[in-house]
Amino acid sequence: MNIVIRKYNDDDIPAMIKIWNEVVEDGIAFPQMECLDLHSGKEFFDSQTYCGVAENSDSNEILGLYILHPNNIGRCGHISNASYAVSKSSRGMKIGEQLVKDCLVQGRKNGFKILQFNAVVSTNTAARKLYEKLGFVQLGTIPQGFLMKDGHFEDICPYYHTL
Image (cartoon, rainbow, N blue to C red; front, side, top):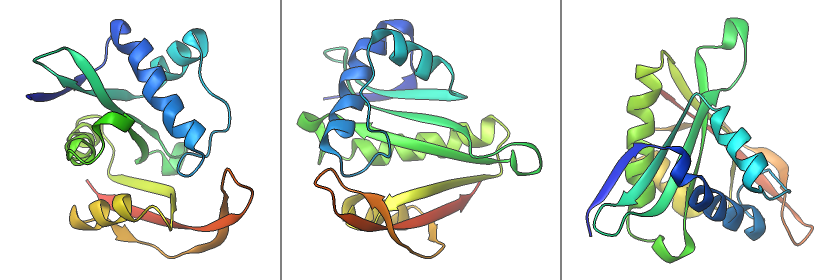
């Protein structure tokens, strides 16, 4: 399998929505509670500074994606934020790592100075391990900052990486 990380195009949107919604429906990582449909998904992805997809170039299947956008405005507009999603069937294949590495490059190319994650759920150990491996620094812990799908709260851990 040959994985290529590239900028998304409109043909990718249905697959991106499917993968995004898998994570939303899991209810353990993304803050969103509503799934995307074709209209809201296109609007959402088009509104980002950059969206990258992981494509199996042998089959043209989209296996994962990321979104990159400003974390804030004005005097804090140099700080970016991102989210990553990998299809359930493609997890454990280091696709997330490729997406994060590409996102760091695209963040710099788009003029950002920092990539910050506001709400990494403390129990998302795979993501936390990856971010720390790639040089992200944890800023602290926000107790009970994330409402899990089952109704209980978990801590969140903000992270940042200078670009």
